[in-house]
Length: 408
Image (cartoon, rainbow, N blue to C red):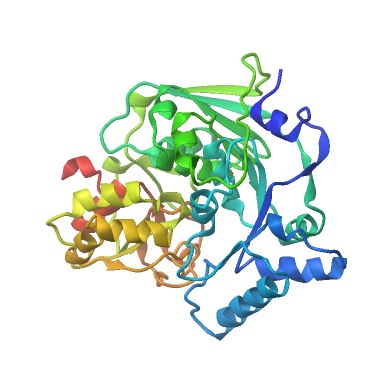
């Protein structure tokens, strides 16, 4: 009996298969090398399958990033790629893929970015690949895969206050480790997962890669179908695992044991309850493909309303897409952030990867809603990144130290 990954890839775990992909996504970091390899192949392009998003170094921070963006722009024009997202017209690539209807249940999607696994929140098998593999898919519309074994994660019960999808996935990664799902597919079940909104589900699937997973898949339900209504491109067919699927391992968690959780430097599995930390911070960052959606902004704004960011802290807010930015303006969230003395700007990946708009100096600490806290991830090799949910980030921005929001 087959898992979701086995059904979408139409093969048994361990088999090598070659399959047609629905979409291949590249961004301004990975796109140019992909196009360079594609041109060496001397093939016609499957333009309808290619999605190009400018998001990592936008607006361009220096001449090098400007040249990179220009090269990508020129490739998109040369090959007539209609699914091209310029600055101001899209946002962070993974949010764009979900918002603009590319991701859907049962689809097989690859992206030249490791967090492509985000689309598993909608029931797709989506995974990150290298620029060379992306180029091959641009030319042939196909790619080979090794069908992964699947782990089943069940989270049942009621979530505590201020506990979000971020805490669930950090709790799991803290339990199994950063190699706990190496080249495996994760499937998520249980009453908690069913009750979660799409935003929190995306956060969970997004960070599957931080445990080494090839994919992190949540079975699609009415919340997904409703979200895709009038949005999805083309048709799709939901895929579900058989009841007696052969899972490699099954992990069960009681939601009541999950609290607002922080991953300390320098790995996402170095987790601890936020309430147990007393760490001063220099920066609080709210945004990214992990936690830059409207639901995340609402949670943070509710905590910050009528309060001020600590005088020793700088807070940066970047919505994950232009659409979310507009919605946050309409809902009055941006004014709350501005009145709290936070810095707000349009959608960009810049701070998450230490590119710009939030680079840390030596010895500085940041509490961040992003997905990685490796050495030098957001700047200087002697800086530190603590991963947390939007509520923890907002509370910490107010107090000047990592704080469980229940304290406020």
